[in-house]
Structures are given as structure tokens and as C-alpha cells.
Image (cartoon, rainbow, N blue to C red; front, side):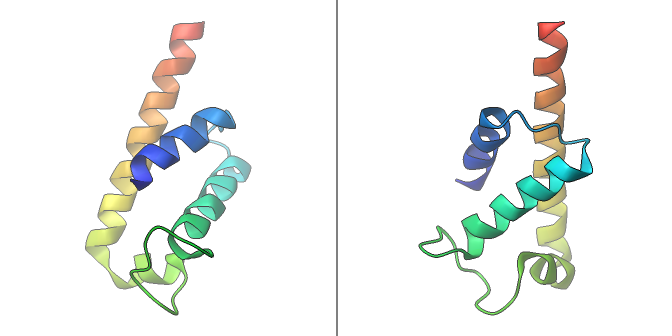
Length: 82
């Protein structure tokens, strides 16, 4: 669910995942998705996403892979337009 939502968000707002400002925008959306009101998933009640990622290395690895996949997909899209 998150991966599809994340792809849609990156494409809709045309985020450049190499930009620190765009990474922050994406990360904020991630926190809203997992922890915001009416969130789809509540794996950790009182932790922020960054704390949860620091606490669980496997989650951090999955999160990193998902971010890399999004970056590669975005770069491919950009290269097709050129």
C-alpha cells in the first residue's frame, strides 16, 4: 500500500528524490501515512517514523530499498522525457 501511495505522491508532485528538500517533503508524507490521523498503518504507537527505523534494522532496509526503487523509477521517467 505505501509503495503505491509513495509512487503516486512522487509523481504527482514531481519530486526529485536527489533533492534534500524533496526528500523531506516525501518523508513528511511518509510520517503522515503511517502515523497521521486516519493512518493506514500504526505499527508503533508513540514512536516517530525515524525512531522506528532506527529501532528496527530490517524495517530500515526495506524502507531504503523502497526509496531506491522510487528514485530509479523517477530517473528512468526523466530520461525518457529527454
